Amino acid sequence: MKTISFNKRILATVVIALLCCFSAKAQITPSVYAGLGNYTNLGGMVGIGTEIQYKFVSVNAAIGYDGCNQVFFHKGHYAGKERVGDNPFIGFDVGVKCYFYKGLFGGVNYGLLGKYCLEETAERVRVDNFYDFSFTLGYKWHCYQRFYGMAWLGVTSNKDANQFVFIFDSKSFVPRVGLIIEYEFKH
Image (tube, rainbow, N blue to C red; front, side, top):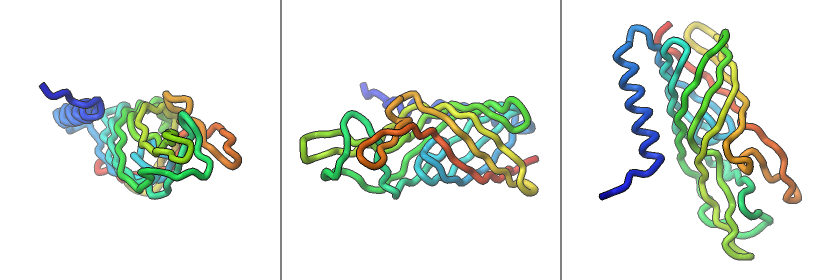
């Protein structure tokens, strides 16, 4: 018997949830968005996605691209060593948001958190894509007609993913941040 990967189960659950929302189509608000950030809600550094809101709860799914070759600290370090597998890629992100007061929201997402260096030998470092949960607080505001802006700040369930290696191999806290422009199909 074939086993289904955890990522495929999450994707199937989100698709089923989206289909269930269509039974209440009079009260849902579908939208599409594009944005820039550090992975959360976007599936990469830049991404496009869709959000379907039902009353004060919404589900979202996005695919994103990371051509920036950004590398995070995780189980080892990178110090000018050879990188393996460090190519641009497409990632994904799925999540749920709860709008609790005039555009303020809290959300949980599962998706790409970045690329991580895993030291194989003293001269060779393997770079892997890393997926996990992130938790965000943000704000959505009305820009013009059916266009909205959205910004967020958050952390991940993996403490190493909240740190970025800057100059001289020193680690600093970097939260999940991003900015989205969204278009709603229904008011």
